[in-house]
Length: 395
Ligand SMILES: Cc1cc2nc3c(=O)[nH]c(=O)nc-3n(C[C@H](O)[C@H](O)[C@H](O)COP(=O)(O)OP(=O)(O)OC[C@H]3O[C@@H](n4cnc5c(N)ncnc54)[C@H](O)[C@@H]3O)c2cc1C
Image 1: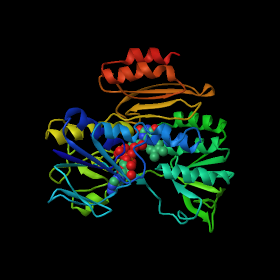
Image 2 (image 1 turned 90 degrees about the vertical axis):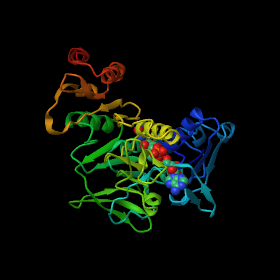
Image 3 (image 1 turned 135 degrees about the vertical axis):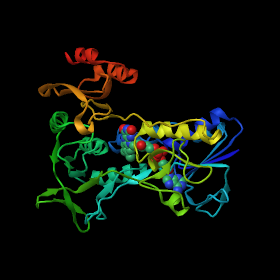
Image 4 (image 1 turned 90 degrees about the horizontal axis):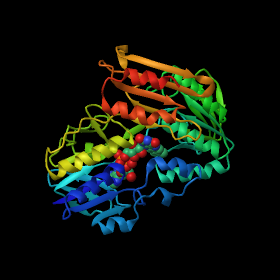
């Protein structure tokens, strides 16, 4: 059987590895738009900060794919798809037949609709090329503004700080990471970032990026101007759905898949940041990996694996700030019980969300790396855990 994978990022490479492990004879072709082989996208933060070079976050050299009989074709974007004839066309005009196809095109950075996003010195951050561009611009800059206080925005702010820039982090919500953290945890986090020289402004709605030939700042709603000669926009992701939509596949925010990661077209599957499952686009590594593997198994044997969602897990990779969010940390409706403890002056905060049977449903751990292993264990076990959790809080 011939398998073609559009998008050689984490989901696509996981699928290729799974297919090869399960079927030594399958034809496997990965089409990748970027010029380089697959690299670990989260490692781009270290590339931006100058701590690592691209080869250090590239897990498999070209020989690795060749040795396994996987045709990894970088610099080869797929431009159209014909589900009726089971073919994919690439930019050179070549038409590639498939028996089963995986769409794993990932996402691009979301660009807010504000004036000035195209002014030189304003960037989004998704690829190795972006990291290089931002780094080069940063060399001639002194002040940066980061629009968006999510995980990537915070980590990027720290990377820019490491490059010697003074940094202001602009978050439109009432506090940082407001979908995962409660206000108490976010206040401790903002304090830790301030101690690293990163100024955090919340409730800061960016209205325009200022400058003509190059950026000179961000104007906030209310008129305040944050001066900056580099602006990094980190406002979320937009799944790449263009190819699928043009071919008539069902598309919502992402490429719509069912519980087998199958799209609305026969023999076409989707996984990763580009896929929408039960209305959710996860946009995180664990989901891309799990979906890539499940999709590959179903591509080999239809309907053999049911994907049931991915438990969210996020760890902030900022030196000196140990933040881990697991599971459901901000339950809607307030029906679930919570246990908390805080020691803000020591940068410590813990919150546990309990499910109806007293099992652990979600956890925030800030400044408490030693609690991560037992808490991860309790979350996975799904058994009543209130007594154990109370003991963990008595630090
Ligand atoms: C700087 C950064 C840091 C991050 N840190 C974390 C983290 O710490 N933890 C975490 O959980 N998540 C993190 N993420 C998110 C994580 O990287 C993504 O969830 C993950 O990469 C998704 O994998 P994917 O394979 O779906 O998409 P991608 O990694 O985006 O890969 C998709 C690939 O498809 C290619 N492609 C697109 N269209 C085509 C086409 N038409 N033809 C051929 N190829 C195409 C793209 O070039 C791309 O290489 C981070 C993201 C960034 C940008």
